[in-house]
Image (cartoon, rainbow, N blue to C red; front, side, top):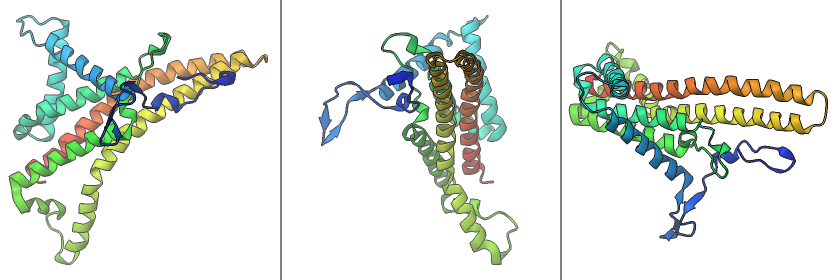
Length: 263
């Protein structure tokens, strides 16, 4: 959160991508500075690596760390099994990595790092460029698997069984458009959910500051109520962070199911 003059807060400043190293690095006319967004993605990958490394000790009596890793892997594995079947086991590592990356990214953006001078948490999933790449990557895998496994028969996915011949062209077009919209809806859903929550937190934080600086009798009341709202929204955001990671992984597994089993 960036404080401005008169104690105001710009709710969009938290999403600004700023260079951390190499502000003037150029390659082919493009700036290739190492940004705060890239830094947090590296941190996320590092945390995921540490989480998995610490939980893969294969102890006969698992400790809490190992139990946590086994719980998460079993959770994703069961989701893949129920949505795709035994054929989906090959995609468990990808869906698990996707789920954990999004979950950690969502949660790390809620850390109150601003209490440390010069520090500021950055939510990479609040940028459509990041969520869009994740969505396109999942959609590309679905296309590759679908055509590799079924060839041109993959197009039968867009014509439900029992469709009258007269309606085939119309139904095919509707199903194709619905299919092509999937990566957009997948990326936008996560982007919008995370962006909206963080904007709301900054708006109420602005109310807290302005209430304290207002010099009126009702100012402190507004500040207290706004702070209570921040606590409540923060708790809700933790829940949303987990739900959005689950929804992204769930929809990815459902799309893979269409490509593998051609339903």
